[in-house]
Length: 117
Image (cartoon, rainbow, N blue to C red; front, side):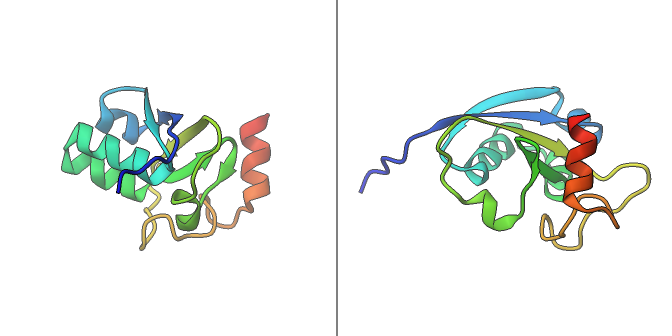
């Protein structure tokens, strides 16, 4: 059966090590979910280093921290995805994107406040 899920524009913005691994600061793909968009860029770059950085990164979608269940939700409108790798000596999560917050000891509200300032 042919999939008729509507696609939306997903704008991906890479920061720090993610930008270096991707070789670009940003790119745009058409996909129904964030998971599909991430799969597309993994295939596009086909680089183990890029894949490692992407798996260790925190994702912020339209200013909100996302978790694994959010990645498979069908999107109704275009979104902006910020890809933030661990930095300043920080470690990535033991299980990619299953951690509660992108910064240890910080609430997602505090992170969002800083991003919106």
